[in-house]
Amino acid sequence: NAGVTQTPKFRVLKTGQSMTLLCAQDMNHEYMYWYRQDPGMGLRLIHYSVGEGTTAKGEVPDGYNVSRLKKQNFLLGLESAAPSQTSVYFCASSYWRGGPESTDTQYFGPGTRLTVL
Amino acid sequence: AQSVAQPEDQVNVAEGNPLTVKCTYSVSGNPYLFWYVQYPNRGLQFLLKYITGDNLVKGSYGFEAEFNKSQTSFHLKKPSALVSDSALYFCAVRDDILTGGGNKLTFGTGTQLKVEL
Image 1 (cartoon, rainbow over the protein chains, first blue to last red):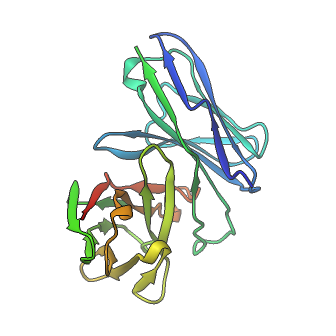
Image 2 (cartoon, rainbow over the protein chains, first blue to last red; image 1 turned 135 degrees about the vertical axis):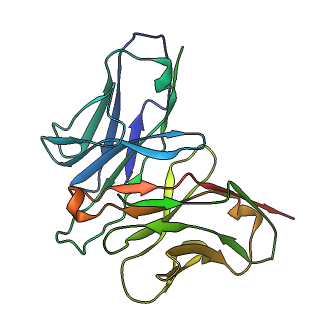
């Protein structure tokens, strides 16, 4: 199993350009997540999905859109990139076994380093 | 809202000595706590988690964590540090089910562990 993979690994954009980051997982996980990591701020949740065809906002959703057309893929889009979106982006996925006491581990991809000039 | 705090940006320890990386939490319900490690230019890797039961949780690579309800702490420990343990460590807490579920995590800001010879 490849686990969680992310494409591309690196990208440089100019302000105003658009791009899509692709996340794929082969573990048949129901839940998927997009985070951004910035120095001194830890990881912050951008959007997440609890199943195919569903998405929800996280802590910092502004400027991003997502889609989950297939269970194994979760796409993160930037319609008009801004320098403030320079960051490292991580995708993660997890099972959900159901019930309030169920807590399943999130598995992370290797990250995409994005620079917006 | 739930949160975790990692009061130390960096921890330095000599190889062979015990190490502790601190984490305190704030939750409205039952605490579900995690530790992740990030090696340079890599994604986050799961170390261990506390859901319920024994206050001493054992995880990967010889790490363990002690859950202390009265002090609202979940410190990461290892009896004998290795140079290869040098990495960025994140504490995280799962969202309370009442805030919408999704098995979402809130991360601390991270602690850089440096183990020297």
